[in-house]
Length: 287
Image (cartoon, rainbow, N blue to C red):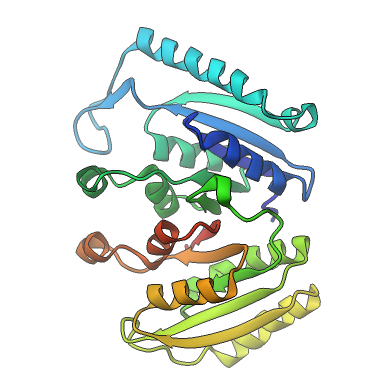
């Protein structure tokens, strides 16, 4: 498994797009990878029926073609900000459909190793009813996702220190394999942080045999790994306080847990962290 060879970068050609691509190119240099830029035109494909589109999709071919041509022109303008060597690693794909679903299916069908994307804010009403493309992608994709809240101010890659969070659950174990591969490649130490909180009904102890095997894996690859357990009012507050103190260059998390009404009202720890820090967050979805 690699997370540096085939990199997918969804863009909307906003002012953030060049910074996201530039950050993705820094990932690609680790294994001489390539960056697939993806623009999804969802303005001219309107579903009717349920959210699963059982009745079909209304399209507007002429407008669709105009927007797709505009995207290609914007991409050509954007390339002027990059060197010839960088341009050789870039390619553009323009697709039509719902953004999150198209991004997710493209990543799966084309063997993308990682998705690197910016998050965009919405007003409260739109956020409640529609959510965001980023949040839907990290909920439904099995491809690792790196989210940049502020691409222009993100710490440089490769990171000098990685912070990974765990709640000692089996679901959080899905983080360890890609985390090990990343830290081995970039030669970065990792802190494995657990937050003991009332919200989490207080953590127990990490399974001793599992911890032994995980430590052995890091040691075998020459990765320095430190386990840290702290107490806090809730998990998000504890993680944010620790980030503020230690200032890692990359945060790695799994997304799992709440669903239904509690998800709507409380959100998730991962999404809460993403919305509040300017550090890139690597998200691995538990199976």
